[in-house]
Image 1: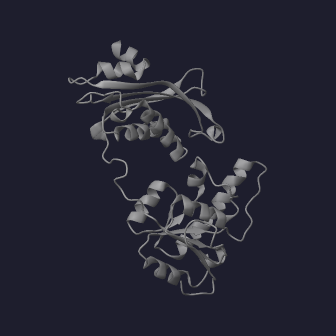
Image 2: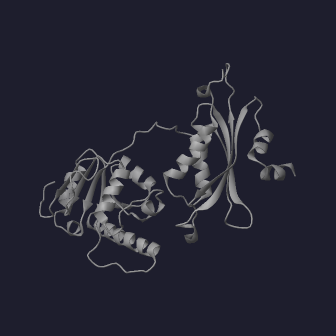
Length: 306
């Protein structure tokens, strides 16, 4: 009965009931409510719902006096910042994923030993629906900032470039460069179906680009279609030639592109900015040199040299 009671109390109850032998201090956040777009169901896309966060962090006591110095403690601002950072990273389907990311960020803090994270949806039923996790310091393998970010060479290929006889030669030359290669494609020449529903049309236009991504992958077996950040990170670290399938990343972006999905070149430039690209090359399309904050250039589809 005590375990059932603790399950529905604030996570502080579980923290106290399962505390280690040594004394630990606790920092708590109660009923922190944020409007968030989250959820795996289609009805949860394009709208926000209230999400409630309750967090308890067990921290090692300071060896000396606090001396009323905020820089010497793990501030509760770090807890709310961990929540805000996790929410800003990308749109998520699962509360479980969000809870894991928040716990991981909190455990990056030097004093943190163990963290309890409870997240509840307040608008999906007559009661609160949620998850609660507990993670300890050994659960976090890597700390923030230990891994250097990879900067890809972004290449946009128009529909004419995808079908060009030079495409294999272009990939040969681009693969010889040091930066990992990430390809974006233009829309096919055929018109996409039309829908009166904006969200449906958005998906149709993105899927049209993905069809061309698969066409390019079929032209050269070195090209692998990728659609998630995890796939991209792995591919860039392992020298894989990746072709971006944009639907998931665009739809899951918290602050998505302001350009139309039908403007494939503008969408590719947006993604190059998101990926902090080393450079941008457009094959078969013109792009202004001052359009973005990294080197850009264009070549014609009749040119066989990069």
